[in-house]
Each structure stands twice: as structure tokens, then as C-alpha cells.
Length: 343
Image (cartoon, rainbow, N blue to C red; front, side, top):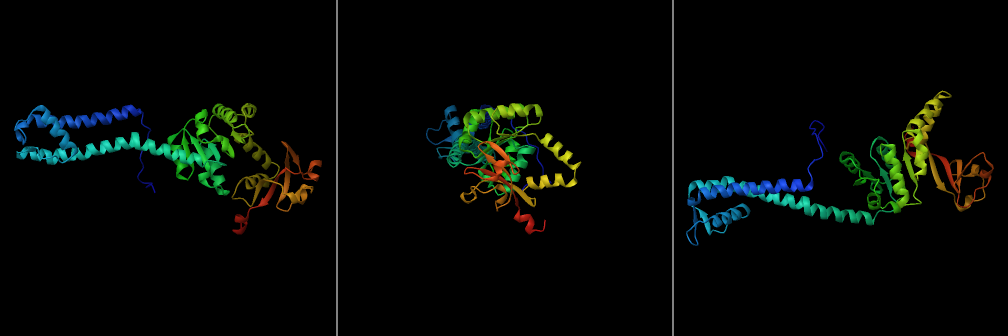
């Protein structure tokens, strides 16, 4: 757990992968050059047990052996100064040099291979999952509500371009892909065709609409919910493929207007929308036993709407007098958890 009194500023490195690799290699060669320089200047302090002569090639050979191993004994320091240099300078450099090599190998080779393998394993198991594009205010609240309603965090896949936001989503157990959701490759990587639903809250309406276009192109039957800020963009979002379009500003205005006609309306709407409320809205497929019965006679909850072949039928309309096979109903059901706690 991170200490709140020990905060660190973080910023993504502006250096490319090749620039970082170049810096590490430059540092390694710089340390080797330092050792070569000292050994060449102090070559009389070294003894070659093979031919007794220290050439520049012997210096390079001894430097490489000293920097990577403890040596073979064919060339040895014979003065106190040379031995102290090898003990106090070369030995720490040897450890640091090995750390650079190991860290570079991990960062640029092992980590990439491991991450690719992990991603392939995750992709193989991605099915019936929920994809959330954007872990901002709306996206994070939606995920928290999904988890509160019983959705396992590992079945939620977050696509986020901001590294810090992606890390926050990962910290609560979500599967995370850091990338641009407007690209086909990104949505294909999270198996958008196998998803249960896509929730898009990209922060900008134009980006949200473009994500909807990309997703609808890849998954024609996927339910897509998009959050837009401007009311003028609700129609373009639907035209881009969004099944449901939510305007938080407009919805907040509706709730505020409702309070003018009764203070309990807004509270009840929030109660319905939240997993922490006393009641919840639930959508489900009707059972075989309910076929032919009126909506008012379902026993699992209070039926308020029927979804029949793309049409919404209210409880007061004639179509609600007889449920048909394939209907989905929206009902108000009690939330057992708050009721048990005396809410």
C-alpha cells in the first residue's frame, strides 16, 4: 500500500525505446572505457603470466574479464594501487554493469515476450466481457457501479490511453489495455466481437463517436452505450452505431427539473440507478411460464416496460396485456442488501 505521506511526481518518459537503449549502452561502454584507461596507464602494475608482456589487446581482454567475471588468473594486478582499484572500483562497476545488462535484457526482450504471452492468454479467455473505453470520471463510476452490482472486475476490460488512468483501473482488478480505441487493432485486441457490451466515455464527443464507428464496423450486433457532453452530438453518436446515448448534463437537468414537482423524484431516480439503493431496475428475458400473461402479473418485480423486437411497450399500452416469447422486460426489484441493513 502506497504511503500517503510519501508522494512522488511521475511523468511518462519522452525518450523513445531506442534512445533509452542507447543511453544504457553508452553508460556501459563509458564504464568500460574508464577501466581500460586506468589499466592502460597503470599497465606496469599488471603482470601477464603467459608471455610477460602487456599489450593494448591484453588490457582490453583483462578489462572485459574483470568487468564480467572475477578473472582467470592469467593476468593479475601486482601493485597495491592496482589491487585497490580492482577491489573498490572495478568490483562495484562489475555489479552495476551486470545490472545494466540484466535490466536491458528484461526491459527490451524478456518483458516484451512475457507481456505478449500474458496478453495472448488473456485474449483466449476473453468472452462475454464488458469493454469500457475511458477511465475518467464517468468511466470509473460506471465500473465501480458494475462491480457493486456483482460484475467480477476481471471480466471488465478497460481501454485507456493515459498510463496513470490505466494503472488505476488495473489496481482494482480490471483487465487493461493501454492504447487508442479508435483503431481497429486496439478493439480487435480486446476481442470486441466476443464482448457482452461496450461502454464509451472517451472524454471528447468526437473521439467517442469515432470509437462507436470503429466498434460497430468490427461488431455489428454489439450493444454500445456512448456518453456525450453536447446534445447536438446525440444524433451523430446514434448514427455512428451507439445503441444507447447518454448525456450526463441533460440527465442532470431532468433530475433537477423533477425536484420542482416533488423532492422525492430525484432521490428515487438515483435509488433506481445505484446498486446501493433500496430498489433496482433489472432487465431480463421472460420465462416460458410467463408467456401469455400480462406484464402486471410477473412475480419477480414490478414490470414497467417490455422490449419486443426493437420496440418499447409501456405497462399501460395494449401490448403489455400479453407477454410473448422472446420479450425482455424491465422491472423494479427490491435490493436485498440495503433492506437487510435497514436502509
